[in-house]
Length: 110
Length: 122
Picture (cartoon, rainbow over the protein chains, first blue to last red):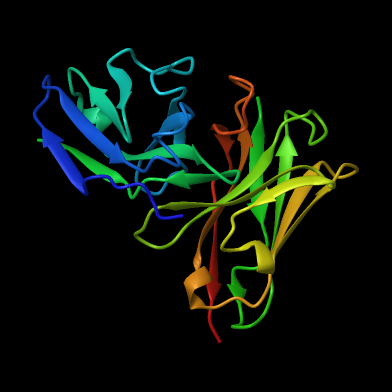
């Protein structure tokens, strides 16, 4: 029932690519492909950003992509832009029928 | 467009019960979607609390199950949360959310309310 582990912060310059990792266990990320990501700007509610590990909801830029290997999921932002500065949370379905979120990663555009 | 709005008291006394309501517009609470509550403690991450489909089908976070209840009011198109025996650790922004309807799972939270801060303090 522990939160998924993410780095506290990641930074990059405009135009660069960055990757955020999300590490779980073999009872959540390792067991299911129900991995999603949420973008949260300061003072706002989270926004649905990635689902099914690597699918994008309508309206989300193709600069965002997801992947998974074993117990770790990743979110890559290509061509980093100032509006990408936000906090990103991963999430996974877990055994016993509940959902677990990551600890959150603050992305800073230098 | 689906919109959700949380409401309820912003201050609850320790050992009391936190009661929140989420009013839905642009969709029906009887539409077959799962409706969730998610909270975020100040400066911390997100924690899924539970979800409800109807008053007979719901799932709760194992660590909160003993203190938690949820219900749906179809006549008012809203759903509610009640969390009993609260402590300072329950102080958080509480969000209500609806699943995406994608991939045949309720695992994705596509629509969120703006959130409401609930503080537990005497």
